[in-house]
Image (cartoon, one colour):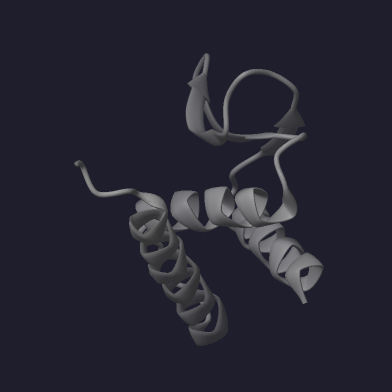
Length: 94
């Protein structure tokens, strides 16, 4: 299921004319500008869930009009789940 989500998100970025690169380094990923070109760079060593969340976040930031309802719903659900899990990981200050 998750590999299917990843491939759908990769396909969506390709349709939006965003080159996608998987690189190694000390970063999570996101959209950046290389010379005059906008590209999406994802750390190749982060877990599959992290790659999916990174791509979903980039797609949501581009605010594309022509997204299919399936992709739009998936991106929204992924971002909501990611925000909920991040809030649950934070520990209250004592």
